[in-house]
Length: 179
Image (tube, rainbow, N blue to C red; front, side, top):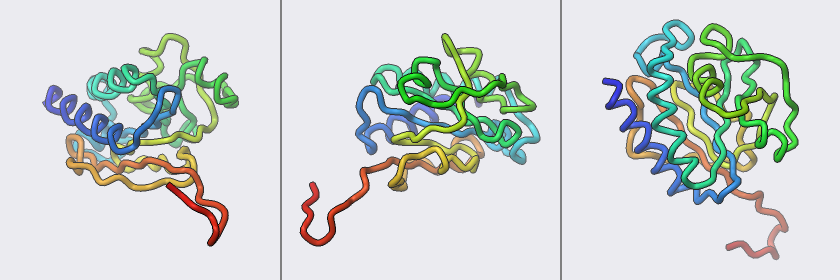
């Protein structure tokens, strides 16, 4: 089962990366309920083991393209995000004081914290693309204008997924030209 989850996750990330046409330095936000992946109610059956498999399906693909990962914590940490310190500094994000663990932050955030070289928690980001695994509500961390991306898979494990990319705002009115 865990191998299948990692394969599904890697497939979804690669498909979203192709649709979003991100460039090195862009930010990719992930919200994840490992409980939902296991078919349980969000926040009720978190799993560090599932979180590790999901991380292994996401992080290598992003790193290979120079794209930074931001992982949203659960509501108990006000949906703050785990990022590398360098990302927080580059994006001028406000660093906040907390360390995610399974019961406050969520299993996926806790695993990300343990795997990053120099993790910090920030209050908010404006990512260029995102993946919501298990209806965790990542929209607040996407840059305007968010555009839904329909993927080949509708779920990872038992968790429904929603993907989004962003695009620049269209400004200028009737005389403006766009690509």
